[in-house]
Length: 223
Image (cartoon, rainbow, N blue to C red; front, top):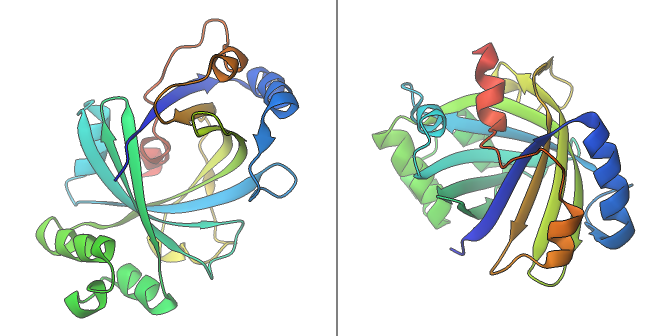
């Protein structure tokens, strides 16, 4: 598991427009983005005591969270991901799930035999049993992604944050969701060893500071 550096900044709509033009003129668009953006849907897991949420709000340095994710309203390709944080560093592990595995996870019927296919499935099954991890909240948003080869840099602008209240609606792209009214635009910058000065300069915004904003925590406003 490789840890990468990560910045997050809460910005406004005017910042977003300026950055979109500035980044688009210098950096490459993510090849997976159609017309410069894509939609993301995630389903986050937590314990009945909201361990992941509490650790985020309390600023625990070392923490993790599990989620299911698919892109551009296409639930035929669902990923299981584990996001790990260590101070200002982050790492992500993932595996593509079969439809049967997705159904088992949503129904709480993932067995050790099914989970043996991949270590990440095994870890989720173990923590579902020992920590009572369960599907908690659907998180929807749009993303404008940019990449820069030196430093393996990825810059994203995330916006139009919405929450789904019923985890069982995860596979329905048209399920009801609610806007997170206080949700700002989120600028994220990730890189390996060092951040090139070019990208640092492009992302500079006067008066903006690094933020600990969490889309999952923001969407939990509805429960």
